[in-house]
Image (cartoon, rainbow, N blue to C red):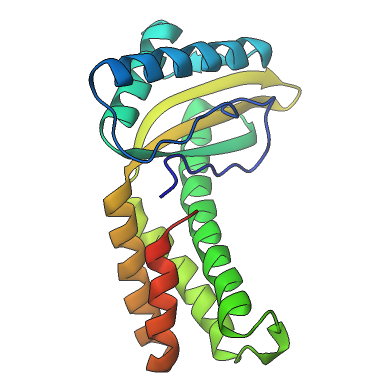
Length: 212
């Protein structure tokens, strides 16, 4: 299972691009070392991109330490969502949350679509039944709904631009809860689209894989 999962509407100055991959929650000296390394890398990226920490009175280093200690110590995955143009921080925050849910769901749907075409129909997309198109759309919509209650805001950055500001928010979600949300979405999507059970059983295996 991939420890960090990134979603972004825009690639903004390389911010958040230096993450390492962890298979499970860390503790003790291992956690301290990983947190220190991640904080240092994120500080450099923030400075290079001229980003400003927002939404907290904590200094950058302390805010990053809290973020990474929580994430790496509790088996959480990171969802990053960006907004390229917004005026107020409240609007920025709402747009970022919507983007996070939308792109998380889109990535989940793309993962399933890719596995269906490659593993079930030998890369012959023309052979995939039309019912799968309805299923993909339903699955992505339902993933967005199911994951919403599990996503928690952690930290955010902003920087001015000619149109107002750019904004980037980082959310955390429990890996196991995220997997459960995708499975719930699968079950509902199968029922909603009346997908044949011979397909649903195989697709459920792809959902359990998560994002690798």
